[in-house]
Structures are given as structure tokens and as C-alpha cells.
Image 1 (spheres, rainbow, N blue to C red):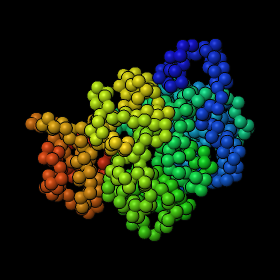
Image 2 (cartoon, rainbow, N blue to C red; image 1 turned 45 degrees about the vertical axis):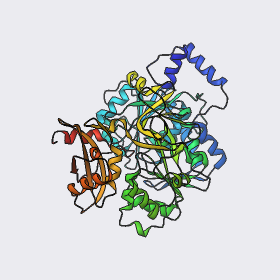
Image 3 (cartoon, rainbow, N blue to C red; image 1 turned 90 degrees about the vertical axis):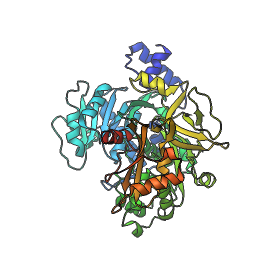
Image 4 (spheres, helix red, strand yellow; image 1 turned 180 degrees about the horizontal axis):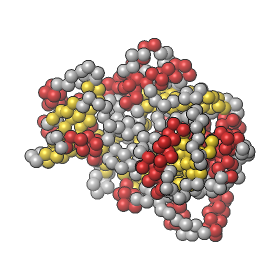
Length: 544
């Protein structure tokens, strides 16, 4: 087969049918490659190296499992799926919260050469159905608390042949097999499946900050390149990780894989501020990855003073820019050592700010990680001078190469090996990256460019302000009117005139909001913490 067709198969760009000869060629090329970076080998190695050491604690079930036992269960799952007639290269969707079955499914799919599709449990059944239909999902594994949504989603899907459920209720619908019963019938032998490092591993979705999420395919190689981040965080065998970010996303997967790679204990929880604080104290957690909103909720907890958080050596932030009040509060009350990284779902982390970096550039998201490159360019793709704002582009082994069945958006985003992030920023002489906002967050008012992030930074630290998003609303005079949507702290009142007066003192006049809207409800955010501003524009456009 042609190199282009092989690339399409490996990266999930289109539906490419392979004949037996072509499949044989792919297998031969896989056999000839040595030291492949495939995800399944991480767990196989961990089982040998770390044996019965505790690998995961699931707070939902209270279950603890070691590396050797985890590997055996994953092998049983692969072998069980094979007995169901599910073949290497077919797509298997899964729907669950943060629990050990998610870990087992991820590694089993890797070992079996399947292509996974982790489903966001916040999606409507119709959205899940459309995703599974688009990728011809052959199987669906789901947690029983999502049974209603799962069963609705998998109706009228001719490709779907296997449905498996797990969870505490023990209730199984007609035609749905029990997860534990299924794996109990299979052997624990290592699967004899050849997997190539550039084979598709799983489908994932972008955050959806500007509308409908886009689907992309992550290869084994893309995900195996996570070691640069763990090195920057100085992860050691003495660490204990708390995973609170949903595991259906790339960040949740990353921490699962890092903990197995280093043989460290990982505590799985579905985020609630008091539960997270309790587990940090009980399990002596040393490292956790949060989005800023999570930290803000933990800081606001009335129970915070009762918990001993002294075991924490690092809090890691990503998903959205870290507001100064949350940063300062986290240092004072949660953990003095903060890390912040920047990247996209499509690229994983590109740059990181360590505690040492923060002493040099407190307002920067850091410098490039190992194997990563970042550029800031103008509209013609030319590098901007140091300190000048332009579009951020990145290149890393973790970056995917295309969106699934979306050639137009792929051509716009992936150019000559570089990923257009859609963000605005600048680089200084020492390589520190400064984020100025989204390209789509650029507000053009009266012919002047306003970066929404700059205005948000001016407002977020005001007394009584819990959260803030700045948007541009259509205006007959200005083109777009700078508008601040402010969420007050409990019991606080927002004085629109005072907010505007403060902005006039700290910002140029054209950057000052024309209007301040108080919204009592939380801002709409993606699971990774990014504000979905298009929803705010849609909500307030008609009232402007």
C-alpha cells in the first residue's frame, strides 16, 4: 500500500480498507521495528519491576490493586474481548468515571491493538451515538451508573456487537454482559498481538471552547512521549499521585500512565473539593494535577483548615490560565510548590513553568519541555520579535497530525509539522512564553485590538469577584463592545461602576469594558477548565 494510505490508517484520518497483502506488509514492518514505544509494554514492565506494590486506590469502590494483579486483569480483558470476536484495529468505546476499570480498559486496548474511544459522560446520548457511529464502534464498555445514557447511545448501531457493563449496582440489561464474569472466564496470558508505535491508540475530543468538539486520533507514539513532563516534575518512586481530572481526557490518561511507568501509587477520585482534601491527607498524596477552578473550590472549602496537606510537594496546573488570587491562595494554603504547563489536547504539554522558573518570570507559563519547540508568528508565518504578540505554534512528538474525517480543519491547524494552537502570546529572550489570550478572544473595538485575558487579569483580583470572562458583543458603533461577565463570591455584590473605574486606572481606555454583567451561576467550562465563551456570547448577544 502507499505511504499515504499507511499514514491514514495509522493516524485515523479516513476510512481505509486493507486487503490481506497490505495487512501482512504492515505486520512485517511492525515485526522489523525494535524497541517500539507502545503503551501496553509500560504495564507489562511495571508488573515485572514492581510486582505486588500498590498501583491504584479507587476511592469510589475502596479497592486497592497491585501492578502484577492489574496486569493480569488487563490480559484477561484482552483475551476476553478476543473471544467475543473483536479484532485488532476495531474501535471499542468506553464510558466511566475515574475508577480502576478505566485503567484496565486503557491498557487492555493498548495490548490488544484496539482503537479506543473514551466517552465524556457529560455528553448527551445522541452525541455519544453520533461519535460511535462515525468510528464504527464494535464494542461498548460502560459503568452501570451511566447505563441509561449508554443504552440509548448504542441503539441502531449495526457495527456494535459487544456491550459490557461494570459497577456496584450489579444490574445488567438484556444483551449486556457482566465485566467481572467476562474476564473471569479468560486466561491471564500476555496477548500475542503485534502493535506498532504509530498505530492508532484511541480517539479523543478537543475541549470544545469554540463550539462542537473535534475528534482526533492519538497513536501509541504520541502518548509514549509523556516522559518529558514527568522529568520536568522530578517524579520519583516515592511520589503518590491524586488523579482528579476526568480520565476520559488526555490529562487523566497521562497521569495514569506516568504512575505506572514510575511504579508509584495513584489515588483515583471523581472531583469534589472536600473529598480531594480528605484523600490528600489520608493517602499522603505528594503530587496532583488540577485546573484552576478546582483549586479555587478547595480554597473556598470551610473544611480546609482541618486537613493536613503537608505531604504535598507539587501542585500542577493546566487547562486555563492560573489567576493570581488562586495562585497566591494555593501557595499559602495548599502547597508552596506550583507547576504550570501549557499545551493543547492535540499536542499534550509544550512548555512548563517550574517553581524556579516562576521566581524568574512569575507571569509566564514557562519554557519548552524536552523534545518540544514553540514559535510565535505573524499572519504570514514569520517569527515575531521578542516581546511582540503573535500566534503560538508548537511541535512535539506528542502532537497528533490531523483531525479525524475533518480535512478542512486539519489543513488549517496542522501546517508543515507545526500545530497552530489558536492562542496568542509572546516569547522573551530567554525563551519564556507569555499567553495573551485566544485568537478567537481577540476583540476588535473601534479598530483597536483588545486581548480578553489582559482585561480579565485586571478584574479577577477585585474584592468580591470569584470568576470573570471578557467577551466581545456586536455593537453598531464599536464593532465589538468589550464586555465583562463577572461571577460574584457568595454574598458579594458587584458594583459595575467600580469595576469600570478600576479598569480605567489600570488599562487603556479602549480596553475598558463598556458593560459589566453579573452572573450568579458559574461560568460554562470544559472538563479541562476552559471557559466556553461562545455560550456567553450566545446568551448575552440578544440582551446587549
